[in-house]
Image (cartoon, rainbow, N blue to C red):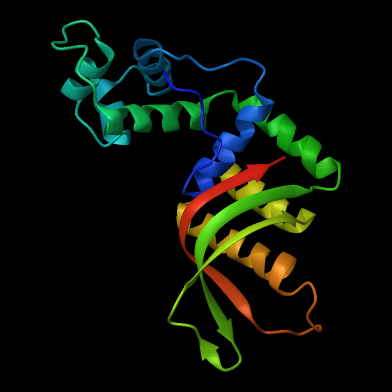
Length: 197
């Protein structure tokens, strides 16, 4: 398996990958071991896991060379990426909660680096032409807490994007503006995103 990338193009996956810095043990690396881990989290139900990964039980068997499979060496990069994302999402939840609590206890600072298409809303109206921006900045405690809280309750991606958009508005676009500034920013599409904490 290739080395773990720490950036992603969704907020949920970027948070999951940032948590990897706090793991005390590495997750399984082989396809068979990863599928065994995911099956243990899905009641050993191949059909439920296949649905979660947007594939079929037969494709899972082939991918992991599970008993009764044919063609276990068949390469499926999309499925491989889906399996990796799911393993990262589920690995060491207690360690991650402890890391999040420690970060919040210590002023809740979080750095982000991203490239995304941003839309803007101001008193005069909205921009219909999202602009590609590349930024690295620090998010402050209330926004970090909101992102962690949403992650812990498995909030949908759109909610996470909205929370991150609010954080960008407050921590970057409003930092040198007068109080009561009405401009807001919304993330239209993420090219890459990485959290550091």
